[in-house]
Length: 304
Image 1 (cartoon, rainbow, N blue to C red):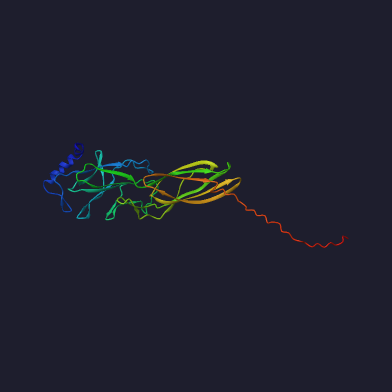
Image 2 (cartoon, one colour):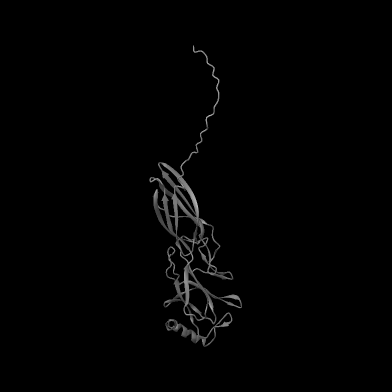
């Protein structure tokens, strides 16, 4: 605690001197004579996978603080950008009031919206759509006891990630080849995320995006390709076009599948292709009509 207090001792002394002349008020409530800086100790949630251009340290993030007074939501401060305060992050000119607060934070530092339905942050817009390189992290710490030092914020990745694809082939003929011609996934490229409910809304229309794919594969083979594209979590359609060639004959296939991409995970799309799916021989169902018997009258004529 001594270490934490030393970080802000100079600023606190100056402010205390000013407070001796007059009391500060916020929404009609008196702030305590002894004021504590609100200091944040941000940490990344420990998960095994990251999104592209991953965020590994969080600083200079946007944070908002709310509380309830007479069952009505009140905003103490909104969309303030933190700055370094020793080993922590803090918000200047705001100090602990004499009541508990709930904190909501986002990085990159975009403005959040606070209302009765929760706290939402925009992730991309219709004018500035996601490119697949983004990594948004959010944190919330609710009903934090007054004068808590520091306030711990545990940030989590809110986007999903398509890490890549891995395909296997299993065809009887060793001379069989599989050539992928096109691989796409359709997903919205902007939306809004609610930090409280952890739900997405106001999603854009799903748009098709090309995915990388492996080179031509043989009859029994494995091919992979790296994608590393961040997307809004959800269930989406993946479509593929590929050609199976065998003994000079080429069969073109066009298929699609549904995939669910969870937040905070790197997901590899895995699929297999085999004879029973694609290389169906042209088969004949042969029926032999039985011989009929009949009597034919033959009239012989002399041979001249």
